Length: 109
Length: 115
Image 1 (cartoon, each protein chain N blue to C red):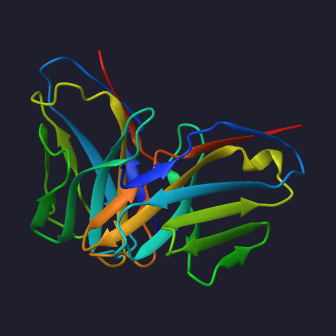
Image 2: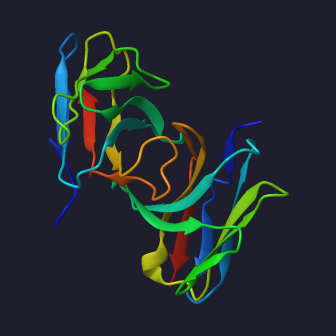
């Protein structure tokens, strides 16, 4: 089993739709979790941290399920500008960070 | 504004040539990292440094070298020993090393191509 697994997609959704991505991780001792957004041929940029209590930033909601060892990202009312690849990042301990391969989202007019 | 600057944006390397990628940060971050990104793969760690004059190998250090003579600078040299260097190279920094609680800040990357 890979340390961090993501469905690479692409997820093609119409504007205004709600879309959710999951990311599973294998190390139960993982400490910190993040979602990054990466546009084509650009660097990853931090989208949001993920907490057990869940956190929301506008149209974006991230949640952590430690029992099932996955994190999720929900995007409501999708915009064309949301089209990007979303990377899951898991910090498993001292200097142990693993990036998922990313899930590609394409929002269609 | 604070940030990480990588240069050059594009770099072409001939067979058998060493090339150096620059990474400078003015965020006053202690830890700096070099990652490589290939299509269809997650970012892979090449080297990291938690403090000046100290650095550690990551998962794919073979064929690469680094230095950390200043807190702000962490250049990466891709040597001729790296047989498949064509990739997108990303430099990152974090305010704390170990288990960064605030995530990483990335530079804009250098796209290296072997010609």
